[in-house]
Length: 80
Image (cartoon, rainbow, N blue to C red; front, side):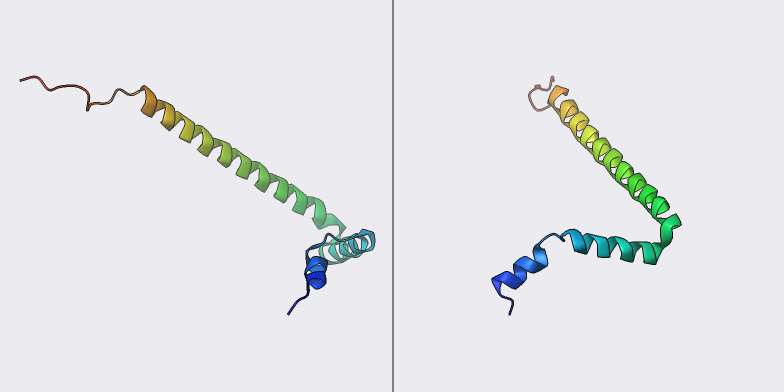
């Protein structure tokens, strides 16, 4: 069982030394040339996600405004 202190250590952000170790490990694993390519890919993915999110939001708002502006057919009485 984890104690509260052990849980806090797992959830806490890395400090200065840990960041240096992480950066060195990333440089060793990916190399200096691959990192800009990797970051561009992440940027493209974030941009596409935000575009899709705004498109869905716009479509929902348009659908809601169409529903409000469309007269309901249940209030009209049929003619014989």
